[in-house]
Image 1: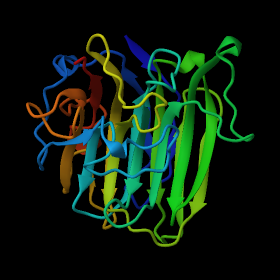
Image 2: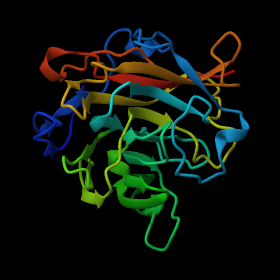
Image 3: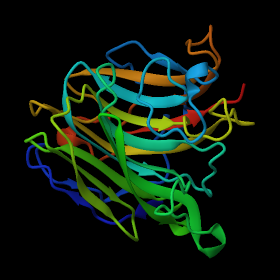
Image 4: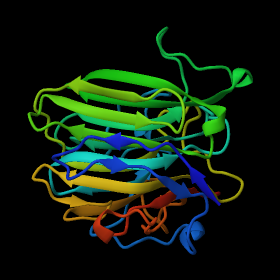
Length: 305
């Protein structure tokens, strides 16, 4: 069965073309549902420590990716400077839980250089000020919200829109684009219905050395995170992935850069030294790949101990 979602366009003349989200298969292709079987990336697989001291305080939303971070799973492109990242991410088919559900995003990030990043994503809804509201689940809320977030020299700017319960199991388009002048990041977040985030955030010439597509448990109120489930299950899927370098080189998640698969393990070491908790699947082709390149989709799986 296919789920029709709203068509969304993200103006990216420098990135090559407008991005169109037309829909996605609710079921994975054969093999994708198995989990634990990676596409072989162009760099060694790495692990994040789900039980380490660097997991961050509950509610921390400003951490940047590193190999010692807490509870992240997905793919990170490095070795080039980047200006564009986008994907269609599925909202988990249940009410969002701050205690155990991940934040899911695409991002441009200056990891290893400074704390700058720009993210577009979906996260469990936590009001952190009077301007951020979470509709009650009893009133049609989902416990999820879509967000745009920019960290510029340690100053974090956040925009959010609520996600309705009817969106659970559906797709949200995420796009982050560093404008050619370097003085703005354009972020578009488009749920299949309801309000859209479409804003440009002022920045001052950031150099984004990573492009990311991650499920991130750093913000969970239950630590350490992610919480191991009773049985293996899939948290989310990323479809129609696109990365573009500052020089204009284009790809899906795979491209002319170093790509690393990121796991969450019990101690920051890959099995057998560490116990696997969360992991991206291998990359596969969702049928909407850029220029027939494929490798534009993956799922994120969580595992019991």
